[in-house]
Every structure is written in C-alpha cells, then in structure tokens.
Length: 437
Image 1: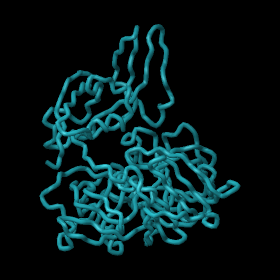
Image 2: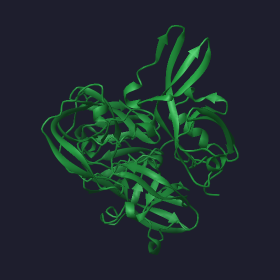
Image 3: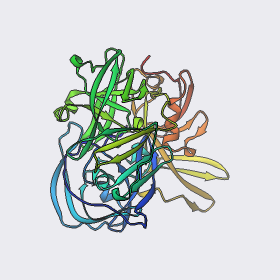
C-alpha cells in the first residue's frame, strides 16, 4: 500500500485550461489503486502521483534524475508526514511552471525532498518523481474516471452539470486545503457516522481510527501488517473487513479496512473529529467529480462498484528493486540476478549485444516482507529473495502488478516459486490462504 498524504503545508496557485473550450482530457495510469500522471516542470517531464491528501506538489528522487530541473527561489524548510520518524528536510521553490496535459500553472510553488529513502518507485514498479495535490484541484472541476483511466478538467465557468439518477453529491469540508466528507460505516451491525479524508494517494480502501466507545474497533477478526509508507516512514496497524460503508444511498458491502496504530496518527485524530480516510481501492468504484469552488464531490458508481474486496493471501510483499541482467545465448537464458540496477534511471534500456550473447535487462522482483504466520512464512521464503519463476513462468514477462495479482487468487490455489537467494536457486511452494480465516 502507498500513502503520501497529510503533508502539513499551505499555499496559493492557479491552474488554467489552455484549450479552446477550456476542457482537457488527461490520460493516466492506475497502478495499485493510485493515479500516476505525466507532469512537466519547467520544461522537464516527470511522473507524479495525484493525491488529494496533500496541498503543494512535492518532488523527490531529484538527485537520481538524468536531466536537470531548474529550481527557482528556493529556501530550506521541514515537512511533517505520516509516520513516526519525525520531520523531513526539504526545499521550497516558488514561481515555477507546471503543465499537466494542456492545463498550466505559471506560478507554482513546490517542495523538494532529498531523502533517498523516500522512493515509491519500487513499490509501484514504475518511476515516481513526485506528488501533485490540492493546488491542481482548487481552480478546476476535476472528473476522475478510474475505469477508463483519464482525468477530465474543466474551467468552472464552462462546466455543465449532467443529470444523473445514480449519482450522489456531497458537501466537502476543508482543513489545511484537504477535502473531507461525511459518511457512515457499519461495524458489528452498528451504523456509525464518520468524517473521512478523501485520500486518492492511498492505495487502501478505508482507514479508520480505532475508538472502542464509539464502536470503531476491529475486535478479534484482524491480522497485523505494514499499512503503508509516508514521507516519515512506514505505518503499522491492523487489517480487517467491516459490514459496509455508506454514502447516502450508495452502499459498499464488506470493504477492507485498516486500523493504524495510535502512535502513527496522534496528530491526525485532532483534526476536527476526523475518523479516518477513503483511499483509491474504494474511490476506483466510482466516477468522482471534484468541485472545490462549490465545496462538493459527486460519486457515480462504475463497473467496479460491486467487485468484492480481497486480501493478499500469500503473505508476501514484493517490490521492483531495479533490473536484473539475463544472458541470452542461443535461445537459452542464464540469470545474473546479483546485478540489480536502479529502476528510476534504467527503464529505457532494453537490451545490450555482446558478441554472440544478448544481455536483457528485466525487472528484479524482490521479496521485501514475509508476513508472520502466512503461507509464504511457513514455506521458508525470506526478505531479499528474488523471484525468478512463478508457477513455471519466468517473471520477466510480468509487471509488478501482474505478479502481485497472482497472490489475490482463490483460496487453496497452489503457488510454486523459484527464487534466487544470494546466488543460490531455491524452489518453494505454498497454498493461498486468507489472512482473516
């Protein structure tokens, strides 16, 4: 899970749609339930997460770039992010040109984080250079079509609201420029009103802050896990499912829910009765229309509305830690998995020819976490193992998301892995099992 939200920064800027009808359609990638969009900064193209949970844009992986982004009017500051490791040192740069499709801001302020540990690329399998937040939303009508993977942005004066029988419109409340809405959750057959942050930068479905007197608690039906990664470190907590989450007449049954440990959210529970947040796995079940000018959001169910929620049944967390080198000789493949190259700088290299050999650069899928008491744990898999084969198929044919999807299949499915452990090839197998059984 990825979470980038709750960066406590403020600011003003303005985006304008530079098309004849003041409407722009911007394609995006939906990866692990989060939106990745192309952003041009002072003429340099980068990939950003679109995150309603932050205010100003944040740029990281800056020192790994192959070209230089001009940094204007910079000053040193500190950002506080989700996690419990304290503040993150950064620079604030003003009066920059940001371009998203045909939508442009000529005076954008953004923040630069130099901490090399802040890197979401391995967790998503594609280069990620920054986060774009509420500055992009506040002057536009932004429609997020998760099913068709595009943004439709419109100048408010040119926006025409369509009649929609299945839509529900809600009032937005704002705190530190971040949007909140009122909903309700049903836990143990008790319906509880909740105020939730809308957090498109989180890949989870729903976070709730545990409060047993109010009925917000997980009971004995849960498993412990790392819930996500913010600018200040990892977040731990409990995962479970609840009966339902309700938005007026829109009811989503049996959603996944995470209860972060109190030590990670002590500053967040103070925010005007906030009870949690809605993330990408729940938002992707709707077409979402954000109208910050009128303080509203409209939700329309899409084809994923009734898709059941499922947990990873393997116990494995896998990252694209870079590229592994495969030697192809007379159609026979040999592996050199000890050679791992940074994902952010090397994705454009396809192959290198050396005499009769061909060196192929393919993703190195490395196990970074093995959940205790899981099928993978009892199979003897370890953090640092590089997955070479999955059910007899070379993982070089997979993307990270395709590989991880194999661990969400039906319970009882047999998984056979061949892994490289410090140069030694090992065969492991296990059967998928729900962590909530």
